[in-house]
Amino acid sequence: MTYAIQAEGLVKRFKETEALAGVDLAARTGSVLGLLGPNGAGKTTAVRIFATLLSPDGGRATVAGHDVVREAGLVRSLIGLTGQYAAVDENLTGTENLLLIGRLLGLSRREAKARAAELLDRFQLTDAAGRAAKTFSGGMRRRLDLAASLVGRPSILFLDEPTTGLDPHSRGELWDMLRALVADGATALLTTQYLNEADVLADDIVVIDKGRVIAEGTPDQLKSEVGGQVLELRPVRSVDLPATHRLVSDAAGDGARIEGGSITAPVKDPELMPTVVRSLDREGIAVGELTLRRSSLDEVFLALTGHRAEPPSGNGSGPGGHAGAEGDGGGDESARDKAVSPA
Ligand SMILES: Nc1ncnc2c1ncn2[C@@H]1O[C@H](COP(=O)(O)OP(=O)(O)O)[C@@H](O)[C@H]1O
Ligand SMILES: [Mg+2]
Image 1 (cartoon, rainbow, N blue to C red):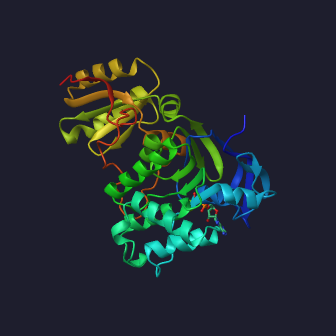
Image 2 (cartoon, rainbow, N blue to C red):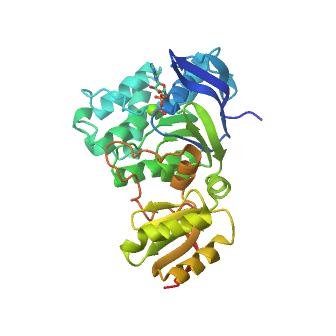
Image 3 (cartoon, protein in one colour):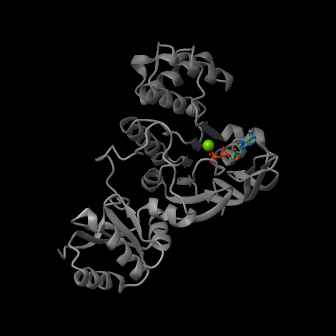
């Protein structure tokens, strides 16, 4: 099988730093591969290699079966790249930016104009098309950047943290645009630090940390295989939090944590829940909420790396807005499998 995007044993060093230490990944044609990892994991390095902007020190990378080093020119003609930082020229207008790229790609003046108008319309930038890009909002700029990457009608897209720093509404718009592109047959490699973004958009996820793949699978596989189930309970009185934590730790071993006013613990043994309930009863601790649920991708990430994904700069809350446009339900961290209230 030829993958639209594939890396085998990819290695890249910057002096002492091994940015990629032998990464394997593959994206099927027409799918979205989420490349997930914290700051410094090696995501941008991988994207830059696929985009022929960096050459690997080891292993190989192909786009539509073409080697990114030996067939760099061909690869460049197949791909669109949206960088972590918008690559548009600030002083040019929206239209001028797209015209310039169209002309650089060899379109005639007329073709370039038509393509620019079409893309500006599609990305809801027509009204702002005559303004310098420096007057655009963050969300408009990302849209223009994405539009710029599409001038040459690429079938394979690399989106490097396209939504980092965007407000939830703009992020949702970008998600919708990416979905539409993939519905039209494009393949995308999307890097993100947002776990729920990968959950919502990606067909498959590869998690990297310090240049190594630490997990891969569909969002559901990652959540169930790596994370399993999580017990979460909230004592009615916050003074009971330490005692509850101790009691859950005794039953669950490592991994019991205090999070806000709740205790969470991975469930490895089906007896955990009844054991905890009996102990709570014995110690007279009233619990307002006791649930068994699937791990969130955040917890999967924590289990894999020993640290949480850092909130990207900008707004610390991560995405989460844009409810409604998404119908999948499967990725929702609040999905409860079971809930009981012993108190
Ligand atoms: N041009 C470079 N020179 C030196 N070190 C670099 C360079 N580019 C990336 N690195 C280092 O390689 C590692 C991976 O970086 P990067 O691919 O940008 O990670 P990510 O995109 O996941 O945040 C980091 O430790 C980073 O500091
Ligand atoms: Mg990066």
